[in-house]
Image (cartoon, helix red, strand yellow):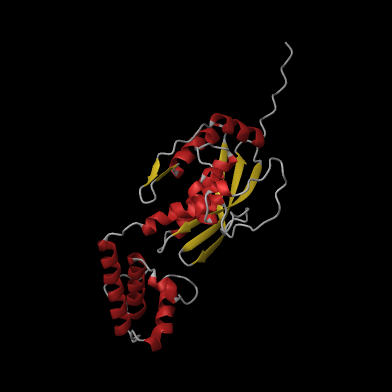
Length: 278
């Protein structure tokens, strides 16, 4: 009996195309109550492609290449690498994400946003969102109703215009961001604009007061002349590798102030004699 030739294994690109064929519309099950709009959650988007990738033995590995912070806005530049578990073939793609947070969650929000929109655009997952249909953003950006703005004719080449300050894509008129980054920023900013529980504010103030009391105890008074000394303590305690700045210090969370307190105690008080060495 004549032996059948071995079938060639699917290439990585073919496997990704097959995963794309398996995915369907992602329902917008998330709800932003502050701005009153629905959105597709990151977990629903991941679920839409995770099983398909696993069934085709394809691994997706994220890595952070650069982190930029401006005020409360964190921008992360990431690289996503697909790896074929059968052949070792790889394909890498760079992507950006942003997160708006006054505390220490900006990086994680930016990473979540980057993964969410990378999967949406790579696998062409429909959610019903269309930046061209975002009339509220258009009105805010142009100051007039959409109907009063001239429409470009079909097929006309687009001229090189301003770029989005976050991801480098084409920016919207009179807006430093592209439609995707603008929507992402508004989505992430909702947490900051929503009223915060008073308990959170009180806990931050209580731990901050304890940190200042410890610094007074160890010879760093809470006056303007010793501000550089306090900023140096913050930088060392939080592992920044530099002096913290006043803007960062004003946004410290209760957890960060607790870390500073623990560092002050460990750096200025000897360990208990009863504690075993090592």
